[in-house]
Image (tube, rainbow, N blue to C red; front, side, top):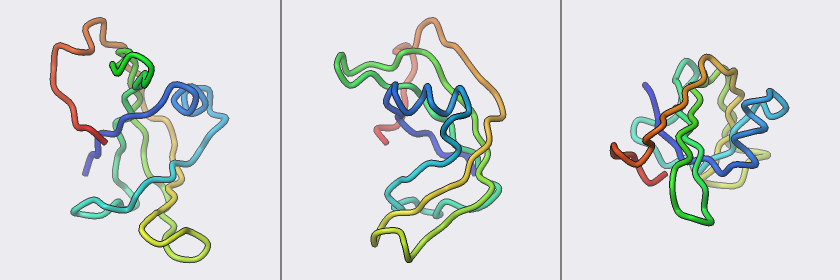
Length: 97
């Protein structure tokens, strides 16, 4: 399963440069996040409310729910699989996650 997610620039760059190897997200997906899933992280600039065109495909290698995570959240260990650059990021739709 692949989940498309908006990711703010500071966190996106940390994943891109491998200094951040996890994602903490609301655990609100159906089906839920699972080991073996992929996350399609799209860099989202909240100042201008637009995608930058940069994206990462990351693999989920571990999902943590429950203690110590707050109710309704999960942490996912991730590994970068591929990097993308879209010169026209607003020409196609995307989810609002």
